Image (tube, rainbow, N blue to C red; front, side, top):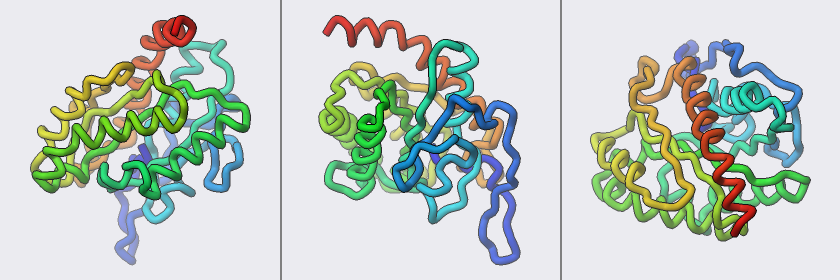
Length: 237
């Protein structure tokens, strides 16, 4: 979710740089905010993970195009608060309960709610690092289920909709094994959005800027299709 769209240039020091190009679908919107690293709501602008995934070069991700698409297709939706938590290149083990990234995610989500927000959904895009090792790929499905179940429990949101991106690529040879685990997750209110057909950057790992934009729109479509049924379930349970 942190996004590497446009991160294709290399400086004289060998450090990746972002080209700074922000597509129209990712432009700031007065109704879109993000929770900053210091827990303040600020106007959202790309790259929205710059102060979260701070050890890497962040570019365009799917978050802003998702939020803009939701507001375009549902003008009465109201303000959108994005809570960026992604750290690129991480293994699913690093998102298990008790680990720093998991606890930070819970802390930020709780702060967003305490400041007046309402949980609507989680967008989840992870798994490339779990394609390197065969054991990690084999255990991925169980670890992912545990993560989703623990998160819902700790957020007191047992029906929280989760929109999971199915991998387009990976760092190792076990891409199909991880994809299969994602597609077969089998948990209620977990929906898959497949990124496989989207074009990649020259590194053959990260999505291009336009792919990130398209992915955000695909996530928005999936969310808006699901939302009426989701609201009915919340009201009737």
